[in-house]
Length: 441
Image 1 (tube, rainbow, N blue to C red):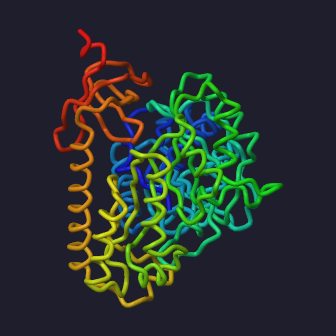
Image 2: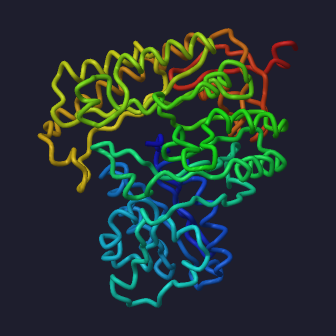
Image 3: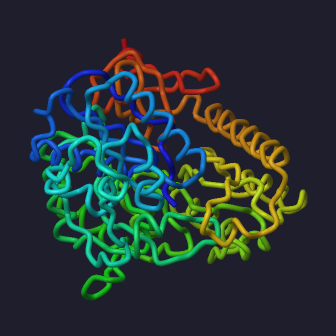
């Protein structure tokens, strides 16, 4: 499960094409493909323009937020065409088609094709005509959609894989994305070359289950081989970052690249989900608690200073207090600093939705405790960096990210520029950095 972006972009009023993105980094990448294809189809010339919602289905709350944003967009853009796509549209198309505010619902495969947008129906069609969503499991390949830029971002995302062959009991995403499909290595390398040539200092590889990359390609190359090939063939890439990975699938080449390649960023976001072995089994995860801890210990030996983030679910069905405490403890035992906490949300159609549920007030309380543990760990991480030298990629005026993906305030540099700095302190939420030039002066 990819780590979700916080919140969603807001669609401004006006003509043209607005794309509102919810969810994971892969959605961010795909939104740029969608924007290009919709423009090619002529949506920008429509009276009132168009608003496209690229939704997320990872939780019931993500779906609720998408519907709320759609209603707001209709109020603010009464003459715009509203198109809904993404994982929530793929898994429950008729729910979105039934909304009066929505003109067209597209599946995850359809959203990447200009012809889908050319088929925008006239107002007043019935719900069946609105929804154009095919069986995602019939899709066998993932195309290498070329994107020259990611609008408004200092870093660029490159899709290397889509879909998932695993069936975790809590997860609806395979039904939104289909089975695992890999982008051929040559196509990935070519896209990275274009983005690096366009001035992006940092490239982020993304996918739904990225460490399963290559299993469906000739010769079954693994993610580690892809990473090494990119770094060897694209010397202009200053930073290469991985999005969420499944530690149990990390191959030897990937571990070697982490140890030996300074341009591969020392930041790994792990799909842990729980710190308790029984809950992991009931989730149908493929790793144990000890394997997670040992992975983090082993990687730290290979790359001292590596930073770990993780997804953890609070209040999974049947979770007792003792089981939850194991998840609390793993924050410290794995040395996690960037925590994404999900209060368990039953998704219709998943096995976990039929399991004995934990009371909602208990789920919320446990999620709050887990977030507090994550915030405390993050503050300790901030304090540990005082006095260190860091390379900071400027994202926007006054803010950037270290190689370990820690947010830093710095009063110099343009978006996309990498600035060398000394960490002088922190404010509890971000590092305070001073450029080396200022220090020397």
